[in-house]
Image (spheres, rainbow, N blue to C red):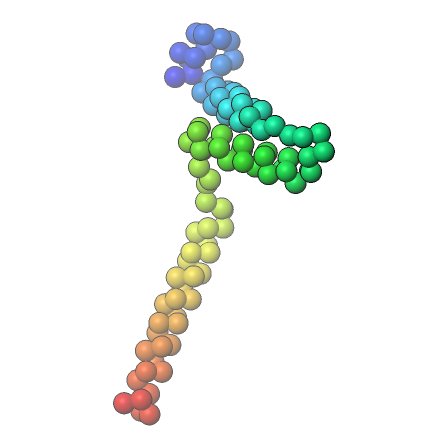
Length: 97
C-alpha cells in the first residue's frame, strides 16, 4: 500500500494520508461554526470538541482501551467472584436454613 501511495507523492504513506484526512475533516467541521465577536471561551471549546468528535466519527476513529483496562477487568472479576462466594456462604449459615 505504501509503495503505491509513494508512486503519487514522495513520502506519502498510509499513516500520512490518514493524518491529512483527519486534519482536513476536523478543519472543515470546525470552520462550520460561526462565532459572534463576544463569544465565550467555553463556546469555542464546545465547538472544538464537537468538531473533533464529528471528525473522529467520519474518519472511523475509535478509542483504544486504556493500558490498565485488562488489569482493571481482572480485578473487577475477582471482586465479583469473591462477592458471589461470600454471598453463598452467608446464605448457608445455620440461622438461614
